[in-house]
Image (tube, rainbow, N blue to C red):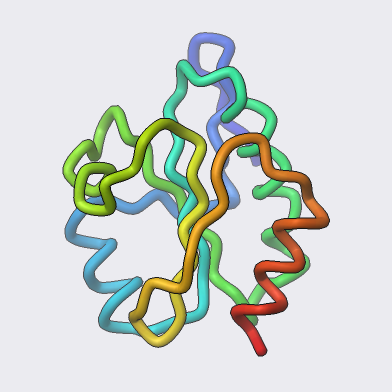
Length: 118
């Protein structure tokens, strides 16, 4: 499902995180996952967000897919010293595993997911 707000698609298959849920899900649960840092007004995010969302069902139960709206959660964006969006951060066992930036191709994203799962 996609929610459209002011003409912008918001990824709904991705669970949206805030500072509190980020700590619990990413660090405490230790699930292998990705977190898409995006904002509604970003044109590149409008391409990357739906692509990430489309991949989520393929990895259901094996890899977590999450979303942070940087306009609503600037502290998370700043915590990782990110510069620009979209940024896709990867975590496993509560530890940062790397990131992909900008207009990422689906093949590159799937390769990174496979690397994290290995």
